[in-house]
Image (cartoon, rainbow, N blue to C red):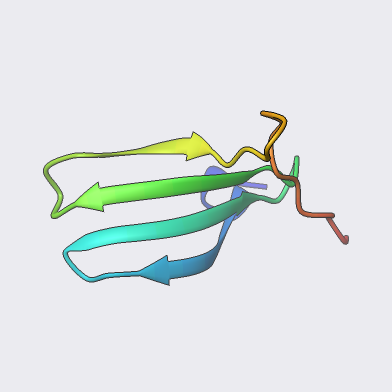
Length: 60
């Protein structure tokens, strides 16, 4: 599996300022991605109320 195949975009919002949710297909961990017109951005894991990562079940 190549690096470009590892993540799957499951949600997207916005055109210039974008907010997206990506799922790591190896671990199932959900990540929040934010970009501000190409000038700034970042990724962070989505956490539940207890501070644990939100995990999507992986089906292979």
